[in-house]
Image (cartoon, rainbow over all chains, first blue to last red; front, side, top):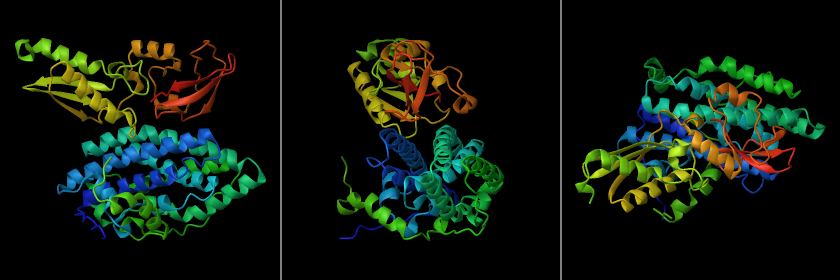
Length: 258
Length: 166
């Protein structure tokens, strides 16, 4: 009954693009969970729009991953037929939506990074990644503006919204460090200018995030212990539940199309 | 029939056919007006078409590709290959003046030309497409489709869509 997982030959470039594709898919799926549930119609549309941008990005990155790998995987197989330990996304993006403040804090942390990351990746020596970056850079800028404005409004709003936003910031902070880490397989890609070193983006990321948090009258956490694992396939318990929903139709009716 | 035409004529007819396809969400705009249609070439017995997506996840792109194939087939071009190109990235600066005019008539405020990253973050001023007033306000950055934001006119009180600068 069980549908076999596909295997992926994780050469450095395959692994690199797969990791970014997984980030986009998982965060896009999380945001799509708000569809029909957001506090107001405009936000329902905003979060669904951002989810759609991320899903589009995921499709481009999965297609490119499959092309680089050069076997018989494709975007659908990579998304639907890998199990939780084969997923390579950041722990941050799989964290549950929680309340509206938690979703928007996660979004601020990620989009402040994505905005810098994709802008830097426009100079990638890999023509496809540079093209994907040029598209994503503009979209990330919108996503960052959206989440920044919300954090300022929530932090500088009522005592309740302030408290919830601060709790979300404190809880999610430990997942931000993983965005700036590099492992051995990525080191070579950075040396050959296919990838950029994300560590160089951290000062600007911290400034962007701190400015928003400060304007929101909230506090930037001072602890710097960071949780990692997603890039290596070691996830929180939340990702399996997400995948069971995301992959349900393909696992139940293999090859289903409509 | 196609074979009897000389090549420049075929190229032009293929371009015109592809360029006649309209955006399914904004049917007053053709894909040529939008700048989505990048390239049409008759190569041997088939036609190669290149389109560029407005937004990464825009669901209209699949429909547009299908419509292009159908439009070419109606003109006698049977083997159309539509591919998506990502680079250079689409920008609203590629929208034709004619496209901007048609958008406004349709009730959608057109994007300002020469949009830049600064424009993306700066204070935007968008004129109401209904009454022309500049006294407008943003309701939501994200509208009914990826490419639009939702605004309201404080003079005539009508809500309207704004095609975002991108």
